[in-house]
Image (cartoon, rainbow over all chains, first blue to last red; front, side, top):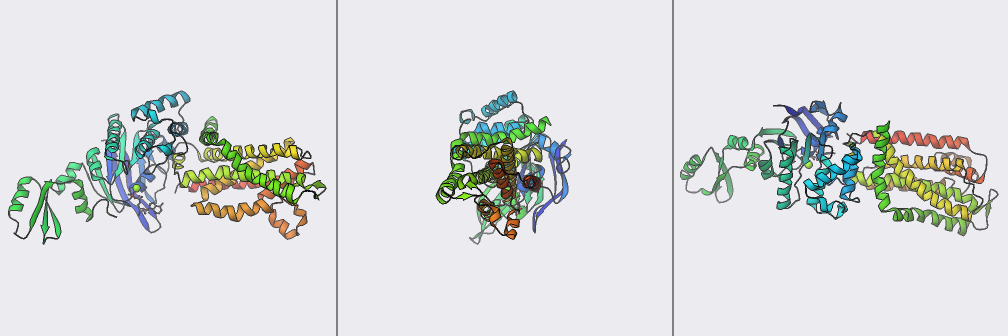
Amino acid sequence: MEEFIVTEKLTKTYGDVTAIDALDLKVHAGEIYGFLGPNGAGKTTTIRVLTTLTKPTSGRALVNGFDVVKEPDEVKKMIGVVQQHVSLDRDLSVRENLEFRARLHHLGSAERKKRIDELLDYVGLTEEADRIVDDLSGGMKKRAMIIGSLLHRPKVLFLDEPTVGLDAQTRRRLWDSIRRLHLDGTTIFLTTHYIEEAEALCQRVGIIHRGRLIDLGKPLELRQRLGLVTVETLVDNKETRYQYFADREAATSYVQNLPSDAKTIIIRDSNLEDVFVELTGRKVGDD
Amino acid sequence: MITVLRDIYSVLWVDLRFLRRHWLRTLATSLVNPVLYLVAFGYGLGGGISFDGYSYLAFVMPGIIALTAMSSSYGGAGYKLHVDRLFYRCFDEYLMSPISLFSLAVGKTLIGVVRGLISTVAILAVGVIISPALIVSPLFMLILVSSCFVFSFLGVLVGMWAKSHQDMTTFNTLVILPMTFLSGTFFSLNQLPGAVKAVLYLLPLTHSSECLRAAALGQTFPWLSFAALLGFGLLFFAGCMWALKRASV
Ligand SMILES: Nc1ncnc2c1ncn2[C@@H]1O[C@H](COP(=O)(O)OP(=O)(O)O)[C@@H](O)[C@H]1O
Ligand SMILES: [Mg+2]
């Protein structure tokens, strides 16, 4: 499979803090790659390095074969970035923000107009085009940012925690937009600390913890490695113990043979959160 | 070359859109200070005094134009940049786009020049009416435009360098504010002891107001000061490029 993004021992330190630590990543062309980790794990730093905004301390990173440090101009032509925070000029209208980005990416005036209208329609923002960004809802701002990142038809789109702070409905609409981009052939690098987002969207998920990649695979593979079925048991009426089994039968026979002082709370499908907790000893979203 | 010009215009474009939406407010706020100085010093304090052989009003007018050029250009280039970087955080969009740092620096400078010229031309219009001694020659305009560039470069430099809002206000209080009053804008440097005078020549606004005054009143032109002004311009521009390079670490 063709690798679209490759990093080798990629490291970035800020003073004493090692934000990312010898990361070796391989993102396939055309896939949705999920980068799952708690706050402070190093997700944003990774995106900043891959998008030429931050220089790595050591190691290297290639995007479509171009080195982010040595050939940043080639990289910039290929990437679209939706940052974690709102990165729009809040005093201007949506259309003005988009036109500005289109100009920065050298779109001609006829193409600018056509592309902006097309994308406004694509994410359902046509009605809002002339409103000032400051007056829009969070979901609308995010959609405007996504359009802004797509104007120049990037080959790879970086989405940094795109659905944080959005309500469930808006989140699903956004997921649909991301899936459509994927179907159109765009490689997508998405970070999230939402387990269900990684499971719902991504073909492969890399789990990052304290700047290190600690596991990688398809969501199903990750769960299989752990055991597809989880049994939660209450021990001494105070602590929940988690046990993982390959299938329901194994789980059930375990439960039947439990000593009488242990209470089984639930038998359920394992999820990525279980994988994460087992790998790191803490929950995603814990600080 | 064409690409550079187009990129510069792209950078300027977005700030022009902002200016277009808020032009009246921008113009009004940038004229408050000079008009206050004009009334307080030109008429209030200096009414009836003559100075270096001119009425104080004629003397102070070029100084007020110089400080208007400074504050409008510096603020016009620096503030929005600062807000874009630290509060709106949309500045990364420039850095991730395929435009050069040179185009970015010049584009961000030009909005300061545009705003500086709008304010100074408005004040100048008042000036020629109330003080007919004022000569608006091509030389005068050349210095005015140069001054706007110099202080816009400074604005971009400070807007890029400031890591917080506090950095920005500190710089304004420690450098810009004293410069406003001390640079021979309201009085003649010849009244001062040599050592003080020497220090004040380290301020770009001193050269700007000396040159503007000489041109406006038809005195012998201080070419050395003009050279110094351009020197400050080069220095500040180099500073802008340095600050922009530093932005991506
Ligand atoms: N500009 C910076 N200066 C200092 N430390 C930083 C900077 N950016 C990130 N960090 C630190 O690097 C670590 C990783 O941060 P980040 O990449 O933002 O994590 P995430 O996006 O996964 O929440 C954190 O400990 C954070 O405090
Ligand atoms: Mg982050």
